[in-house]
Length: 173
Image 1: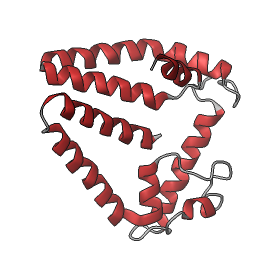
Image 2: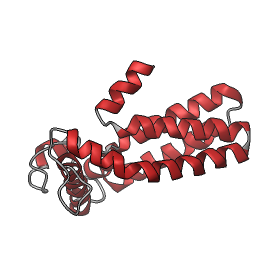
Image 3: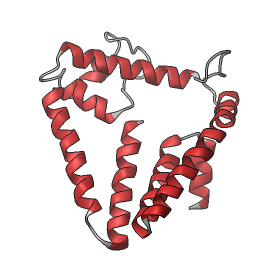
């Protein structure tokens, strides 16, 4: 696990670390609620304090370009936000049934994303390609699954809930 964590850190992949944090919060919460709250608060404080240094380090080492003055974004962040906006424009144009399966790859340039060809957010992709109806069904699936897994007792339930939360987080970025 240590080499994997080092690799994730060196590639500045945020989702695994957020998922790990969520796992620790869930595990602590299931042991004692006050422990879960404490881990949540301490983690948020440490994250807030570490964020400026992380962004500075990330901006100075990623190949997509340095952080510009007055900004905390590198080029890959700007591309990702542009892709999210393109997906939202796709939803706005065809809200009920969406643009069609895998349409983002073909239509991204038309909607303002000439670079990525992927919205880098699977939940936005569902809404853009399949529409609001399917998107709401997907969100209902997330909610029902999370509630069901939260009711599974013991460490198996904790692991399944945390694993599911990790999947949901990873699909968001």
